[in-house]
Amino acid sequence: MAAATAPPSCPILPRMPRPFDPAPRALLTCRACPRLVRWREEIARRRRRAYADQAYWGRPVPGFGDPDASVLLVGLAPGAHGSNRTGRMFTGDASGDFLYPALHRLGLASGPRAVSRDDGLTLRHLFITAAARCAPPGNRPRPEELAACRRWLARDAAALPRLRVVLALGRVAHEAWLDLRRDEGAPLVKARFPFAHGAEHRPEATGPLLLDAYHVSFQNTNTGRLSAAMFDAVLVRARELAGLPRLPLTSSGLGP
Ligand code: SF4
Image (cartoon, rainbow, N blue to C red; front, side, top):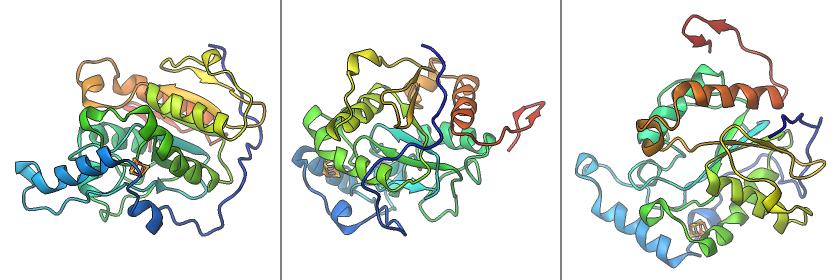
């Protein structure tokens, strides 16, 4: 896949009024997908033994990050006992334990740990959202559920006036972004933009670039399919494509 260069600005209309509220009541009370509503609430009732003393979030999980972000990270869906428990993207599970240290190394997160939605962690240049906002059984949202949830992905993307790069974690996120842009009228042929780790796509002349990475799931990171070095390299490229300053190299990798 040829390397791409980000255009100077990537407008997506209509813009959301500012300040942007990533957690409107309409999202937090959304029940458009009966199967996912049942599952998110059942998990919240049953709980994992290790978290038996915690009140699970058990609702749609809002986007999180810097309203001036130039990079939008799109995940798959909340983890049953991660963000479905804590109420913040990639917070409280193995995926977050891999993701946030990397974001911190690359100067995109204020710290390496994400344990709860009130732990004080902040993001810089980055906003995190997902293809589906409710935890799905087996981590597999159905096509009609992803279609229903695109309205919330659209809302987050439209709220970012400086957006230049969409970083898709996994094939589902990649497809969700292309489906969204096609829904919004972009004349793109999805088959021309196949998902591949590290691939850079320009699906439309003036829209954001699409950069792919394997998902930071425990399955991928535990098997070595996705290493920290591989993911750091993608984040470095996301920074470059977004026009963010280069970070100094240190003996242990890239400094904060
Ligand atoms: S997955 Fe999205 S559209 Fe479906 S119920 Fe949850 S928030 Fe609503």
